[in-house]
Image: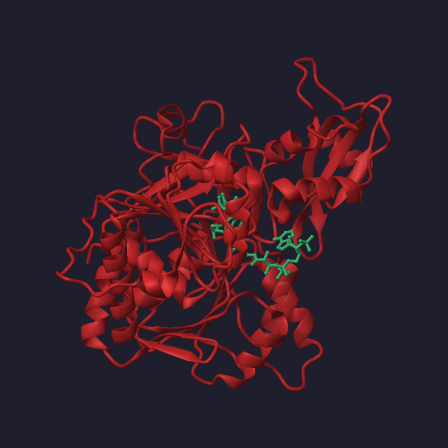
Length: 510
Ligand code: MLC
Ligand code: AMP
């Protein structure tokens, strides 16, 4: 099986009436979902999509997301994933860089994109889920009306064709499009589903956003691959998840980021009765604290399985399904994939117990960054090892732990924030003379975005609210600083580089 959409087609034959997706009271059987996917693919063909063309999804969780995602693959297109919180800066860059011809979005996205019309000459149309009451701008097509009846059978995508472009930032502040092939998606989900013993009998509560790897390439792909079911939610809400955990007796799995587990624990303290244990609770995308792991076991009666992934590599490592799930570790590489720890300078492998950079290799690793051969070359060594930028070590009995990052990255509630991108926006504010952005611990989000600001001479002093609002107009709102500290100057080393560890010490006391 070379692609997820091929697995869907197979399951439409094998389990025609079985529910693939549930969403707000609607049920999509495998037959119905495959038919809708085919109709979206036919709509794309009719519209004029050529193989290899890019279709961006700027859409919150809903069945239409799944139809457009798999329909694009069936039509031979490539999907560009766009976080629905992204605003002008991110949208302008991603939609231009990816050369997307079409965007599938909702009414909110439609308005947001209309403002950018002049900057997006390559964007030919929007397919809108919901009302399309826009005044002017980029042509908007109604999702239902866009669907068409196929006139001929589709070929499934080939293993080496481009399935997804997923943007992930770097030290430069400009996000790079990670190119994932169908073979990356298929090989990773094959080893993951086998390892976690995911079968057609499973039912997943899927509350993670589908526009990132965790929700899409684990939650949705695993469901379709195995012929299982998923109850899809528009978004995560602790109270409604807890209610479902108590009431839906067919549920077998839940996947979340650590912030979600923290909120479930808070909510469970107020519950009458305990949530039902599931077959599998998985956490990833950010470090799960030992406290949360232990408290969850105490209250939910289950040890969370922590795994480690990345946009460029999908899922790298997992704690064992059988055997010890060890708190504070991410387990070992999935079968068929490799990992090692190397010295950051010499790039030589290190012995167990020593901290270095984690490198990974295998069929799950992406094909490179779109239009960026230099960044791609830098990310790999000559033997094909991919440099993750995560620091970690391996125990003698083979468990990996992540204990730092070689690159500047803040992970807030499972979303990545690259300081440079926020700094570039803040520097445009007239009251900001100089700025350094970094992360500090936060009880709910894991880390929060903090800005140390040197006020510009002769300008009014900026406040946290004012700078947060300034960012919100241009960037995803989760990137805005939650704390702004005014400082007379930034500590710099002899080379002029800001010493953020000193700011973290001074401002955060760590
Ligand atoms: C939302 N907000 C956040 C935030 N999420 N602020 C900081 N960090 C976050 N993660 C802000 C919004 O901007 C908004 O601000 C306010 O909180 C309310 O928005 P909301 O949408 O109602 O928030 P909430 O429901 O509380 O969202 C929290 C969350 C969400 C944890 C449910 O962040 C989430 O779904 N995180 C999952 C991310 C994820 O899937 N990551 C996987 C990446 S893949 P304002 O000011 O506008 O009101 C990957 C690879 C791997 O990393 O290994 O998996
Ligand atoms: P992204 O680029 O959004 O895919 O984020 C990937 C990054 O999330 C990784 O490089 C890690 O830094 C982090 N990450 C993912 N899973 C874990 C985990 N279980 N523990 C610690 N960090 C993690």
